[in-house]
Amino acid sequence: MSAAASRVSSVQWRLVSNGSSRRLVPEEGDAVPEPAAVLFDIDGTLVDSNYLHAVTWHRAFREVDADVPIWRIHRSIGMDGDELLRTLAPDLDSETADTASDLHSRYYLDRADELTLLPGAREILRHLHDAGLRVVLATSAPPDELARLRDLLDAESWLYAVTGAEDVETAKPDPTIVQVALDRAGVTPQRAVFVGDTVWDMRACTKLGVAAIGVLSGGISRGELTADGAAYVCDDVDHLRRDLRRSPLASLL
Image (tube, rainbow, N blue to C red; front, side, top):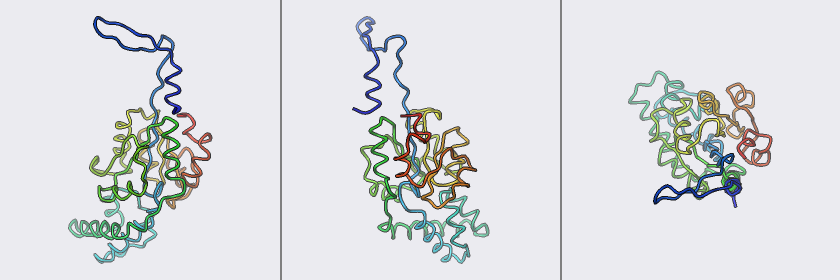
């Protein structure tokens, strides 16, 4: 029995009749626990994909004669794609920027067989699901990329909901995708924790009042994640799974 099911079963119920209908309601003084959710970014958090994104963006920029150092690209991974292009290559016209974006997607998918799970990725999803939390993949990845990531994770039975690029016009640090994830999970910001690897994740969560956990597996420093709002930072999700009771997730378990 999951932790959530155990909590519900401990509530005392009574049968109420209203004409021809009957329903079970909790006894006065008892309350069904509010649902809680953990929202996961995927790239750099569950899947080791940030550096593949960086090198394929670098190749795409070179193809359109834009000189963008790869270290700058890496620091922008996780940012909304249009914003990334405006930030890294502001002189590109819209048509050339679209070409660069299309090339990046093509090069990335061509090398998608190089993607690997980060340590503990599947284990933490299963553990939190079994503990009674609603597990949501809160990403704005485009459909073709998201399909590859979900296949790699092989965790569909543990997921409560998934978001994608079609759900928003602008990705993080705009908080809309986080709000969509909250809505799909059916929880308030106070009953959710977000796990991500970039400052864009942290900023989006801060705007909504969602507690954020930062992981170092995406290549961004502890200091930067903390400065942008992370309440807790650890090496990766495997570390987080082993240290849940010291993290913001403890309040939901």
